[in-house]
Image 1 (cartoon, rainbow over the protein chains, first blue to last red):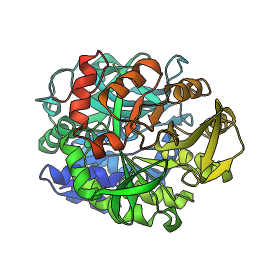
Image 2: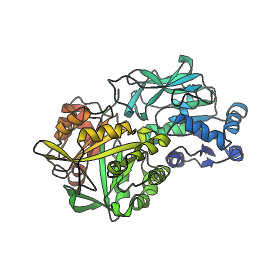
Image 3: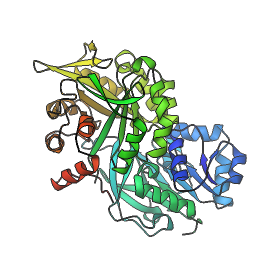
Image 4: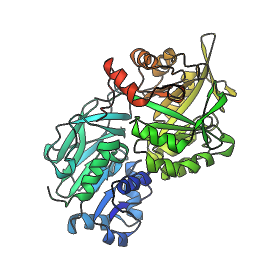
Length: 203
Length: 252
């Protein structure tokens, strides 16, 4: 079953619907025990970085999440804020993240660009990866965020251009994170969800 | 490159989809769930649902949101009757990506901050209904029925300060007219904040969309009548605008 971490951060219903639509069984992970039934883990999330970390801590999900990913090697997909949480640190609330992937989260500051970055945008520099298989070149995905991820090139699986090029997909080993919302990105987004649900976590 | 968006607006009244003129004279135009599934097939960029029975609070929205989010895999915004943080939180938990606030922003703009502190500013669209009277913008709340004394600039600045994420401008005068958009309204409003702007009111044909995108610094256009009353659809609009050099989502 595809575990979806339920930690009070936004629209998890849509993620569950997308997983179900692709023919998999979603499972809401509400506590540490629920991880055992999940073959894959999705960390969704919209909202404030610091509040998200605090919620994971308060619900005692932080340690079992790390264990599922680092010890049990379950594939992990972070979406939007859930992707940003994978990184080391965010400017939003000056807060440490899960530190599963080295990188920082920063605010879009160029006054010539409207914030948030909201709408459909294409990826560039997409690397070969099992989860990204079959995505057409120049396919658009739905972004909505005011903060962006900055990661080293070896952890950046795709970039997106707004006021700068930022990390749109990050990954290391069995972990992948997407800044955009695959569950809201129609056919190509659903394909990413399907690829993730079929992924063995190997690159 | 970030693309421009075309967003069908679905107005809800007594459990049905309706469309009117100048916020009244509503006509039945179908079933909200069926219509949402059709927009999903037509690859619309996003969907907006506005409840006109705001006396019922968000109940009419909750009645459809679960079903809609099962058949639609694109961003969904819901508004009309949101009175509290709990209303917004409930909608977001049930599948809304963004909530649309209007009347409450005049009475209690702090609610914007409350919602955006928890769900992020990208989750809050402030809708502003405007009449143009002798070249002056007049703001109205409560589905166009209540005059608000503040200026467009004051209102946008205040909503921005409280952490709104997007502005949706609706021209009451042009609503349902199918005569084209008030681009000047968007041009003027764009100077009062750095938020992305969605322009609504007046869609009648694809040429209107093109004119609005070419003349005003807007991120998106929201359409009711165009898709309700003509043979038009979001996929054809996407193709037409691309052929005129406007960047829209790749539908592949």
